[in-house]
Image (cartoon, rainbow, N blue to C red; front, side, top):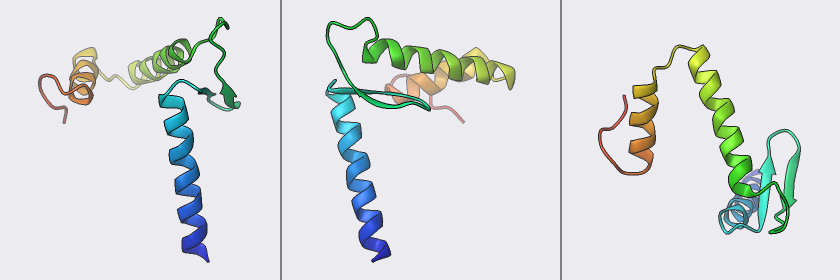
Length: 84
């Protein structure tokens, strides 16, 4: 029963990720998921860029250097060096 519940939670999570990747919904941290409205000011891209900016600001507080961040981004995008 526990395995079944975990499997359902995983499948629902993957479905939300796929809907977000396709632009049908967007997620606001701490608020929930919302249907994307092509005419709205707040697009998925702007929400994600805002979240990214918040994460970068937090990294700066922990003295993570910009070159480390660049290496990490390049790794994710499959470019350049890998980060440690």
